[in-house]
Picture (cartoon, rainbow, N blue to C red):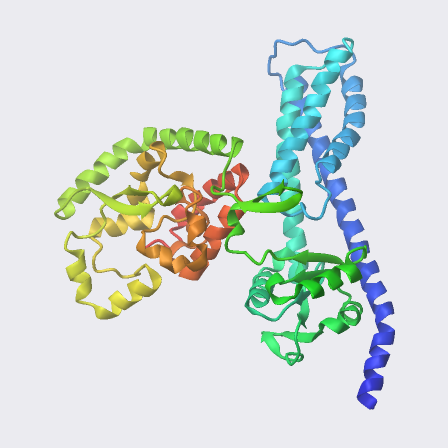
Length: 499
Protein backbone atom coordinates (compact mmCIF):
# COMPACT_ATOMS: atom_id res chain seq x y z
CA UNK A 1 0.00 0.00 0.00
CA UNK A 2 2.83 2.34 0.88
CA UNK A 3 4.43 1.61 -2.48
CA UNK A 4 1.19 2.47 -4.33
CA UNK A 5 0.83 5.73 -2.37
CA UNK A 6 4.45 6.59 -3.23
CA UNK A 7 3.79 5.95 -6.93
CA UNK A 8 0.64 8.07 -6.87
CA UNK A 9 2.47 10.91 -5.17
CA UNK A 10 5.22 10.73 -7.79
CA UNK A 11 2.71 10.80 -10.65
CA UNK A 12 0.80 13.69 -9.08
CA UNK A 13 4.02 15.65 -8.72
CA UNK A 14 5.09 14.74 -12.23
CA UNK A 15 3.25 17.51 -14.17
CA UNK A 16 5.13 20.17 -12.22
CA UNK A 17 8.43 18.35 -12.81
CA UNK A 18 7.63 17.94 -16.50
CA UNK A 19 6.67 21.57 -16.99
CA UNK A 20 9.80 22.67 -15.16
CA UNK A 21 11.91 20.49 -17.44
CA UNK A 22 10.13 21.82 -20.54
CA UNK A 23 10.61 25.42 -19.42
CA UNK A 24 14.29 24.81 -18.69
CA UNK A 25 14.74 23.20 -22.08
CA UNK A 26 13.11 26.10 -23.90
CA UNK A 27 15.20 28.57 -21.89
CA UNK A 28 18.36 26.74 -22.97
CA UNK A 29 17.24 26.74 -26.60
CA UNK A 30 16.43 30.45 -26.59
CA UNK A 31 19.78 31.20 -24.96
CA UNK A 32 21.63 29.08 -27.49
CA UNK A 33 19.82 30.53 -30.51
CA UNK A 34 20.40 34.07 -29.23
CA UNK A 35 24.09 33.36 -28.76
CA UNK A 36 24.28 31.81 -32.24
CA UNK A 37 22.55 34.78 -33.88
CA UNK A 38 24.83 37.26 -32.07
CA UNK A 39 27.87 35.20 -33.04
CA UNK A 40 26.75 35.16 -36.69
CA UNK A 41 26.07 38.91 -36.66
CA UNK A 42 29.53 39.58 -35.24
CA UNK A 43 31.22 37.34 -37.83
CA UNK A 44 29.22 38.92 -40.68
CA UNK A 45 30.20 42.39 -39.46
CA UNK A 46 33.86 41.37 -39.24
CA UNK A 47 33.68 39.94 -42.75
CA UNK A 48 32.38 43.24 -44.14
CA UNK A 49 34.95 45.19 -42.10
CA UNK A 50 37.95 43.13 -43.23
CA UNK A 51 36.76 43.33 -46.83
CA UNK A 52 36.56 47.13 -46.50
CA UNK A 53 40.03 47.38 -44.98
CA UNK A 54 41.55 45.22 -47.73
CA UNK A 55 39.72 47.08 -50.50
CA UNK A 56 40.14 50.66 -49.35
CA UNK A 57 42.83 50.81 -46.65
CA UNK A 58 45.45 48.23 -47.63
CA UNK A 59 47.05 50.26 -50.39
CA UNK A 60 46.44 47.51 -52.94
CA UNK A 61 45.56 49.01 -56.32
CA UNK A 62 42.18 48.05 -57.85
CA UNK A 63 40.76 49.13 -61.20
CA UNK A 64 37.52 50.34 -59.72
CA UNK A 65 37.48 53.86 -58.27
CA UNK A 66 35.58 54.17 -54.98
CA UNK A 67 32.61 56.50 -54.71
CA UNK A 68 32.64 59.68 -52.62
CA UNK A 69 31.96 59.57 -48.85
CA UNK A 70 33.06 55.92 -48.93
CA UNK A 71 33.26 55.38 -45.15
CA UNK A 72 29.78 56.68 -44.37
CA UNK A 73 28.29 54.84 -47.36
CA UNK A 74 29.68 51.42 -46.38
CA UNK A 75 28.86 51.89 -42.70
CA UNK A 76 25.22 52.50 -43.59
CA UNK A 77 25.20 49.63 -46.09
CA UNK A 78 26.64 47.12 -43.61
CA UNK A 79 24.14 48.26 -40.94
CA UNK A 80 21.37 47.25 -43.36
CA UNK A 81 23.02 44.08 -44.67
CA UNK A 82 23.68 42.36 -41.34
CA UNK A 83 19.93 41.89 -40.57
CA UNK A 84 19.44 40.78 -44.19
CA UNK A 85 22.11 38.09 -43.74
CA UNK A 86 20.57 36.88 -40.48
CA UNK A 87 17.20 36.66 -42.24
CA UNK A 88 18.71 34.60 -45.07
CA UNK A 89 20.38 32.33 -42.52
CA UNK A 90 17.02 31.83 -40.82
CA UNK A 91 15.36 31.03 -44.17
CA UNK A 92 18.04 28.38 -44.84
CA UNK A 93 17.32 26.69 -41.51
CA UNK A 94 20.56 27.71 -39.82
CA UNK A 95 18.64 28.37 -36.58
CA UNK A 96 16.74 25.11 -36.77
CA UNK A 97 17.98 22.63 -34.16
CA UNK A 98 17.98 19.77 -36.65
CA UNK A 99 20.73 21.63 -38.58
CA UNK A 100 22.69 23.11 -35.68
CA UNK A 101 25.98 21.34 -34.95
CA UNK A 102 25.49 18.98 -37.91
CA UNK A 103 29.07 19.54 -39.10
CA UNK A 104 29.53 19.53 -42.85
CA UNK A 105 25.79 19.94 -43.48
CA UNK A 106 25.75 23.13 -41.40
CA UNK A 107 28.80 24.51 -43.22
CA UNK A 108 27.18 23.73 -46.56
CA UNK A 109 24.09 25.71 -45.52
CA UNK A 110 26.30 28.63 -44.43
CA UNK A 111 28.01 28.65 -47.83
CA UNK A 112 24.70 28.50 -49.72
CA UNK A 113 23.08 31.19 -47.55
CA UNK A 114 26.07 33.55 -47.87
CA UNK A 115 26.07 33.02 -51.62
CA UNK A 116 22.39 33.95 -51.83
CA UNK A 117 22.98 36.99 -49.63
CA UNK A 118 25.74 38.34 -51.85
CA UNK A 119 23.69 37.57 -54.97
CA UNK A 120 20.84 39.69 -53.57
CA UNK A 121 23.30 42.57 -53.16
CA UNK A 122 24.55 42.15 -56.73
CA UNK A 123 21.03 41.89 -58.19
CA UNK A 124 20.00 45.08 -56.37
CA UNK A 125 22.66 47.04 -58.32
CA UNK A 126 20.85 46.15 -61.57
CA UNK A 127 17.50 47.44 -60.33
CA UNK A 128 18.96 50.61 -58.80
CA UNK A 129 21.64 52.04 -61.14
CA UNK A 130 22.56 54.68 -58.58
CA UNK A 131 23.52 51.96 -56.10
CA UNK A 132 27.22 51.55 -56.94
CA UNK A 133 29.53 49.36 -54.83
CA UNK A 134 33.09 48.14 -55.32
CA UNK A 135 33.14 44.71 -56.95
CA UNK A 136 36.30 43.68 -55.08
CA UNK A 137 34.60 44.53 -51.78
CA UNK A 138 31.60 42.38 -52.73
CA UNK A 139 33.76 39.39 -53.64
CA UNK A 140 35.94 39.62 -50.54
CA UNK A 141 32.88 40.13 -48.30
CA UNK A 142 31.35 36.90 -49.63
CA UNK A 143 34.53 34.88 -49.02
CA UNK A 144 35.33 36.40 -45.63
CA UNK A 145 31.77 36.16 -44.27
CA UNK A 146 31.51 32.52 -45.32
CA UNK A 147 34.82 31.64 -43.68
CA UNK A 148 34.30 33.66 -40.48
CA UNK A 149 30.75 32.41 -39.87
CA UNK A 150 31.94 28.82 -40.31
CA UNK A 151 34.81 29.51 -37.92
CA UNK A 152 32.53 31.14 -35.37
CA UNK A 153 30.05 28.27 -35.47
CA UNK A 154 32.92 25.80 -35.12
CA UNK A 155 33.94 27.36 -31.79
CA UNK A 156 30.33 27.61 -30.61
CA UNK A 157 29.89 23.90 -31.38
CA UNK A 158 33.03 23.07 -29.40
CA UNK A 159 31.68 25.08 -26.47
CA UNK A 160 28.32 23.30 -26.56
CA UNK A 161 30.08 19.93 -26.73
CA UNK A 162 31.94 20.80 -23.54
CA UNK A 163 28.66 21.76 -21.87
CA UNK A 164 27.05 18.51 -23.03
CA UNK A 165 29.93 16.57 -21.50
CA UNK A 166 28.90 18.10 -18.16
CA UNK A 167 25.22 17.29 -18.71
CA UNK A 168 23.97 20.61 -20.12
CA UNK A 169 21.98 21.05 -23.35
CA UNK A 170 20.96 17.38 -23.22
CA UNK A 171 17.54 16.21 -24.46
CA UNK A 172 15.96 13.53 -22.21
CA UNK A 173 14.76 10.62 -24.35
CA UNK A 174 12.74 7.45 -23.92
CA UNK A 175 13.46 4.53 -26.26
CA UNK A 176 10.34 2.49 -27.02
CA UNK A 177 11.29 -1.16 -27.38
CA UNK A 178 13.56 -3.66 -25.69
CA UNK A 179 14.68 -5.74 -28.67
CA UNK A 180 18.02 -5.78 -30.50
CA UNK A 181 17.21 -2.72 -32.62
CA UNK A 182 16.17 -0.66 -29.59
CA UNK A 183 19.35 -1.55 -27.73
CA UNK A 184 21.49 -0.75 -30.82
CA UNK A 185 19.84 2.67 -31.14
CA UNK A 186 20.29 3.46 -27.45
CA UNK A 187 23.89 2.25 -27.41
CA UNK A 188 24.77 4.36 -30.45
CA UNK A 189 23.20 7.50 -28.97
CA UNK A 190 24.62 6.92 -25.51
CA UNK A 191 28.14 6.48 -26.90
CA UNK A 192 27.98 9.85 -28.64
CA UNK A 193 27.41 12.64 -26.08
CA UNK A 194 27.88 15.20 -28.85
CA UNK A 195 24.44 14.22 -30.13
CA UNK A 196 22.98 15.85 -27.00
CA UNK A 197 20.77 12.84 -26.19
CA UNK A 198 20.31 11.60 -22.63
CA UNK A 199 18.68 8.16 -22.48
CA UNK A 200 16.17 8.22 -19.59
CA UNK A 201 15.31 4.56 -20.12
CA UNK A 202 13.56 1.94 -22.24
CA UNK A 203 9.80 1.47 -22.51
CA UNK A 204 8.68 -2.16 -22.71
CA UNK A 205 6.15 -3.05 -25.40
CA UNK A 206 5.50 -6.42 -23.78
CA UNK A 207 5.63 -7.40 -20.13
CA UNK A 208 8.20 -8.85 -17.79
CA UNK A 209 11.17 -6.59 -18.60
CA UNK A 210 10.45 -3.62 -16.32
CA UNK A 211 13.39 -2.99 -14.01
CA UNK A 212 15.93 -4.86 -16.15
CA UNK A 213 19.17 -3.05 -17.04
CA UNK A 214 19.61 -3.53 -20.80
CA UNK A 215 22.63 -1.22 -21.03
CA UNK A 216 24.99 -0.03 -18.29
CA UNK A 217 23.01 2.52 -16.29
CA UNK A 218 19.94 2.34 -18.58
CA UNK A 219 16.93 0.36 -17.38
CA UNK A 220 13.49 -0.55 -18.63
CA UNK A 221 11.58 2.11 -16.69
CA UNK A 222 8.05 1.10 -17.57
CA UNK A 223 5.63 -0.29 -20.13
CA UNK A 224 3.54 1.25 -22.91
CA UNK A 225 0.34 1.79 -20.87
CA UNK A 226 2.31 4.02 -18.46
CA UNK A 227 4.20 6.02 -21.10
CA UNK A 228 2.39 9.30 -20.38
CA UNK A 229 3.39 9.06 -16.73
CA UNK A 230 6.97 8.20 -17.73
CA UNK A 231 7.17 11.20 -20.06
CA UNK A 232 6.12 13.51 -17.23
CA UNK A 233 8.21 11.76 -14.60
CA UNK A 234 11.47 12.06 -16.57
CA UNK A 235 10.74 15.38 -18.31
CA UNK A 236 11.05 13.67 -21.69
CA UNK A 237 10.97 15.78 -24.88
CA UNK A 238 11.90 13.02 -27.36
CA UNK A 239 10.47 9.53 -27.85
CA UNK A 240 12.49 7.28 -30.15
CA UNK A 241 10.57 4.26 -31.39
CA UNK A 242 12.29 1.06 -32.51
CA UNK A 243 9.77 0.17 -35.19
CA UNK A 244 10.55 -3.54 -35.13
CA UNK A 245 9.66 -3.69 -31.43
CA UNK A 246 6.19 -2.17 -31.55
CA UNK A 247 2.91 -3.31 -33.08
CA UNK A 248 0.99 -1.22 -35.59
CA UNK A 249 -1.81 -0.62 -33.08
CA UNK A 250 0.64 0.51 -30.38
CA UNK A 251 2.36 2.85 -32.81
CA UNK A 252 -0.94 4.45 -33.85
CA UNK A 253 -1.89 4.85 -30.20
CA UNK A 254 1.47 6.47 -29.46
CA UNK A 255 0.91 9.02 -32.21
CA UNK A 256 -2.62 9.66 -30.98
CA UNK A 257 -1.18 10.53 -27.57
CA UNK A 258 1.82 12.62 -28.60
CA UNK A 259 1.49 13.33 -32.32
CA UNK A 260 0.16 16.87 -31.73
CA UNK A 261 1.99 17.54 -28.46
CA UNK A 262 4.32 20.49 -29.06
CA UNK A 263 6.44 19.53 -26.04
CA UNK A 264 7.17 15.95 -27.10
CA UNK A 265 8.68 14.90 -30.42
CA UNK A 266 8.35 11.35 -31.76
CA UNK A 267 11.06 9.84 -33.94
CA UNK A 268 10.79 6.40 -35.46
CA UNK A 269 13.56 4.16 -36.74
CA UNK A 270 13.16 2.70 -40.21
CA UNK A 271 13.43 -0.91 -39.10
CA UNK A 272 15.71 -1.28 -42.15
CA UNK A 273 18.70 0.57 -40.73
CA UNK A 274 21.23 -1.47 -42.69
CA UNK A 275 19.48 -0.85 -46.03
CA UNK A 276 18.91 2.89 -45.75
CA UNK A 277 22.51 4.10 -45.72
CA UNK A 278 22.11 5.29 -49.31
CA UNK A 279 18.83 7.12 -48.77
CA UNK A 280 15.38 6.51 -50.17
CA UNK A 281 13.01 7.95 -52.73
CA UNK A 282 9.32 8.27 -51.89
CA UNK A 283 6.87 8.08 -54.78
CA UNK A 284 3.11 7.68 -54.98
CA UNK A 285 1.98 4.70 -57.05
CA UNK A 286 -1.78 4.49 -57.47
CA UNK A 287 -2.16 6.99 -54.58
CA UNK A 288 -0.10 4.67 -52.36
CA UNK A 289 3.13 6.22 -50.98
CA UNK A 290 5.97 3.75 -51.57
CA UNK A 291 9.69 4.12 -51.08
CA UNK A 292 12.61 2.60 -52.94
CA UNK A 293 16.23 2.37 -51.82
CA UNK A 294 18.75 4.25 -53.98
CA UNK A 295 21.18 1.97 -55.79
CA UNK A 296 24.02 4.52 -55.50
CA UNK A 297 24.72 7.03 -52.74
CA UNK A 298 25.73 9.97 -54.93
CA UNK A 299 23.58 11.39 -57.69
CA UNK A 300 23.46 14.44 -59.96
CA UNK A 301 25.69 17.35 -58.98
CA UNK A 302 27.23 15.39 -56.10
CA UNK A 303 28.74 12.91 -58.55
CA UNK A 304 30.10 15.66 -60.81
CA UNK A 305 31.61 17.71 -57.97
CA UNK A 306 33.22 14.66 -56.37
CA UNK A 307 34.70 13.59 -59.70
CA UNK A 308 36.12 17.08 -60.30
CA UNK A 309 37.69 17.03 -56.83
CA UNK A 310 39.18 13.58 -57.52
CA UNK A 311 40.71 14.57 -60.87
CA UNK A 312 42.08 17.93 -59.76
CA UNK A 313 43.38 16.58 -56.46
CA UNK A 314 45.04 13.46 -57.87
CA UNK A 315 46.71 15.37 -60.72
CA UNK A 316 48.02 17.98 -58.29
CA UNK A 317 49.53 15.34 -55.99
CA UNK A 318 50.95 13.30 -58.88
CA UNK A 319 52.73 16.37 -60.24
CA UNK A 320 54.67 16.60 -56.98
CA UNK A 321 54.90 12.91 -56.14
CA UNK A 322 56.08 11.32 -59.41
CA UNK A 323 59.83 11.79 -58.72
CA UNK A 324 59.34 10.39 -55.21
CA UNK A 325 57.44 7.40 -56.62
CA UNK A 326 60.31 6.59 -58.98
CA UNK A 327 62.77 6.64 -56.07
CA UNK A 328 60.47 4.43 -53.98
CA UNK A 329 60.16 1.92 -56.84
CA UNK A 330 63.95 1.63 -57.10
CA UNK A 331 64.29 1.22 -53.30
CA UNK A 332 61.71 -1.60 -53.27
CA UNK A 333 63.48 -3.52 -56.05
CA UNK A 334 66.84 -3.19 -54.29
CA UNK A 335 65.45 -4.21 -50.91
CA UNK A 336 63.82 -7.52 -51.91
CA UNK A 337 62.93 -9.63 -54.93
CA UNK A 338 59.68 -8.97 -56.71
CA UNK A 339 57.80 -6.20 -58.56
CA UNK A 340 57.63 -2.65 -57.20
CA UNK A 341 53.85 -2.47 -57.65
CA UNK A 342 51.41 -4.82 -55.94
CA UNK A 343 47.94 -5.32 -57.39
CA UNK A 344 45.24 -6.00 -54.83
CA UNK A 345 41.89 -7.34 -56.06
CA UNK A 346 39.21 -5.26 -54.35
CA UNK A 347 35.49 -4.51 -54.69
CA UNK A 348 34.31 -1.27 -56.29
CA UNK A 349 30.98 0.39 -57.05
CA UNK A 350 28.24 -2.09 -57.96
CA UNK A 351 30.41 -5.01 -56.87
CA UNK A 352 32.86 -4.61 -59.79
CA UNK A 353 36.27 -6.08 -59.08
CA UNK A 354 39.39 -4.07 -59.96
CA UNK A 355 43.12 -3.99 -59.20
CA UNK A 356 44.06 -1.38 -56.61
CA UNK A 357 47.69 -0.34 -57.04
CA UNK A 358 50.07 -0.14 -54.08
CA UNK A 359 53.79 -0.17 -53.64
CA UNK A 360 54.80 -3.68 -52.60
CA UNK A 361 55.56 -3.73 -48.88
CA UNK A 362 55.80 -7.51 -48.35
CA UNK A 363 58.16 -10.29 -49.32
CA UNK A 364 56.96 -12.37 -52.27
CA UNK A 365 57.12 -15.44 -49.98
CA UNK A 366 55.15 -13.64 -47.28
CA UNK A 367 52.58 -16.46 -46.93
CA UNK A 368 55.27 -18.93 -45.96
CA UNK A 369 56.81 -16.48 -43.48
CA UNK A 370 53.42 -15.91 -41.84
CA UNK A 371 52.59 -19.64 -41.69
CA UNK A 372 55.50 -20.07 -39.30
CA UNK A 373 53.55 -18.00 -36.72
CA UNK A 374 50.10 -19.63 -36.09
CA UNK A 375 49.18 -17.04 -33.44
CA UNK A 376 49.68 -14.26 -35.99
CA UNK A 377 47.57 -16.12 -38.55
CA UNK A 378 44.71 -16.15 -36.04
CA UNK A 379 45.19 -12.46 -35.20
CA UNK A 380 45.15 -11.54 -38.90
CA UNK A 381 41.93 -13.47 -39.47
CA UNK A 382 40.24 -11.65 -36.58
CA UNK A 383 41.47 -8.07 -37.14
CA UNK A 384 42.62 -7.93 -40.76
CA UNK A 385 45.88 -6.26 -39.61
CA UNK A 386 49.08 -7.20 -37.80
CA UNK A 387 51.16 -4.77 -35.78
CA UNK A 388 54.31 -6.87 -36.15
CA UNK A 389 53.91 -8.54 -39.52
CA UNK A 390 56.80 -10.87 -40.53
CA UNK A 391 55.75 -10.52 -44.17
CA UNK A 392 56.64 -6.81 -44.32
CA UNK A 393 60.02 -5.77 -45.75
CA UNK A 394 62.31 -3.11 -44.28
CA UNK A 395 61.36 -0.58 -46.94
CA UNK A 396 57.74 -1.70 -46.57
CA UNK A 397 57.67 -0.77 -42.89
CA UNK A 398 58.77 2.76 -43.73
CA UNK A 399 56.24 3.05 -46.56
CA UNK A 400 53.39 1.89 -44.33
CA UNK A 401 54.26 4.23 -41.48
CA UNK A 402 54.39 7.19 -43.86
CA UNK A 403 51.45 5.97 -46.01
CA UNK A 404 53.63 6.36 -49.11
CA UNK A 405 52.72 2.81 -50.18
CA UNK A 406 49.30 4.12 -51.26
CA UNK A 407 50.58 6.75 -53.72
CA UNK A 408 50.02 4.51 -56.81
CA UNK A 409 46.28 4.54 -55.99
CA UNK A 410 46.25 8.06 -57.43
CA UNK A 411 46.12 6.33 -60.82
CA UNK A 412 43.07 4.33 -59.65
CA UNK A 413 41.46 7.66 -58.79
CA UNK A 414 42.24 9.04 -62.26
CA UNK A 415 40.81 5.88 -63.86
CA UNK A 416 37.57 6.44 -61.92
CA UNK A 417 37.87 3.23 -59.90
CA UNK A 418 38.56 4.95 -56.59
CA UNK A 419 38.01 8.33 -54.97
CA UNK A 420 40.34 10.50 -52.89
CA UNK A 421 37.88 10.11 -49.99
CA UNK A 422 35.65 7.13 -49.35
CA UNK A 423 35.21 3.98 -47.28
CA UNK A 424 38.12 1.61 -46.83
CA UNK A 425 38.63 -0.68 -49.81
CA UNK A 426 38.00 -4.36 -49.09
CA UNK A 427 38.34 -7.70 -50.84
CA UNK A 428 35.46 -10.00 -51.80
CA UNK A 429 36.21 -12.18 -48.77
CA UNK A 430 36.09 -9.21 -46.38
CA UNK A 431 32.52 -8.36 -47.39
CA UNK A 432 31.24 -11.05 -45.04
CA UNK A 433 32.71 -9.17 -42.08
CA UNK A 434 30.44 -6.22 -42.87
CA UNK A 435 27.38 -8.41 -42.36
CA UNK A 436 24.14 -6.62 -43.24
CA UNK A 437 26.11 -3.48 -44.11
CA UNK A 438 28.10 -4.98 -47.00
CA UNK A 439 25.63 -3.95 -49.71
CA UNK A 440 26.07 -0.30 -48.75
CA UNK A 441 29.79 -0.45 -49.56
CA UNK A 442 28.91 -1.13 -53.18
CA UNK A 443 27.10 2.22 -53.53
CA UNK A 444 30.25 4.40 -53.40
CA UNK A 445 33.83 4.21 -54.60
CA UNK A 446 36.46 3.15 -52.06
CA UNK A 447 38.78 5.94 -51.02
CA UNK A 448 42.50 6.53 -50.62
CA UNK A 449 41.64 8.17 -47.31
CA UNK A 450 38.54 8.29 -45.18
CA UNK A 451 37.16 8.44 -41.65
CA UNK A 452 39.00 5.24 -40.76
CA UNK A 453 42.37 6.73 -41.73
CA UNK A 454 41.88 9.97 -39.80
CA UNK A 455 40.39 8.23 -36.74
CA UNK A 456 43.30 5.99 -35.83
CA UNK A 457 43.62 3.55 -38.75
CA UNK A 458 44.81 0.18 -37.46
CA UNK A 459 44.19 1.21 -33.84
CA UNK A 460 40.45 1.15 -34.62
CA UNK A 461 38.67 -2.19 -34.20
CA UNK A 462 37.12 -3.87 -37.23
CA UNK A 463 33.61 -3.12 -35.94
CA UNK A 464 34.74 0.47 -35.49
CA UNK A 465 35.89 0.61 -39.12
CA UNK A 466 32.50 -0.64 -40.28
CA UNK A 467 30.73 2.03 -38.20
CA UNK A 468 32.98 4.79 -39.56
CA UNK A 469 32.48 3.66 -43.17
CA UNK A 470 28.70 3.61 -42.75
CA UNK A 471 28.76 7.04 -41.10
CA UNK A 472 30.68 8.45 -44.06
CA UNK A 473 28.31 6.97 -46.63
CA UNK A 474 25.23 8.16 -44.78
CA UNK A 475 26.54 11.70 -44.18
CA UNK A 476 28.41 12.35 -47.44
CA UNK A 477 28.87 15.90 -48.68
CA UNK A 478 31.61 17.72 -50.57
CA UNK A 479 32.39 19.63 -47.37
CA UNK A 480 32.78 16.34 -45.50
CA UNK A 481 35.31 15.21 -48.14
CA UNK A 482 37.28 18.45 -47.80
CA UNK A 483 37.25 18.10 -44.01
CA UNK A 484 38.59 14.53 -44.18
CA UNK A 485 41.30 15.55 -46.68
CA UNK A 486 42.36 18.32 -44.31
CA UNK A 487 42.44 15.92 -41.34
CA UNK A 488 44.47 13.40 -43.37
CA UNK A 489 47.53 15.67 -43.31
CA UNK A 490 48.09 15.59 -39.52
CA UNK A 491 47.03 11.93 -39.38
CA UNK A 492 49.78 10.99 -41.85
CA UNK A 493 52.40 13.22 -40.23
CA UNK A 494 51.63 11.86 -36.75
CA UNK A 495 51.48 8.28 -38.13
CA UNK A 496 48.40 7.47 -36.02
CA UNK A 497 47.71 3.75 -36.20
CA UNK A 498 50.05 3.27 -39.19
CA UNK A 499 51.71 -0.16 -39.27
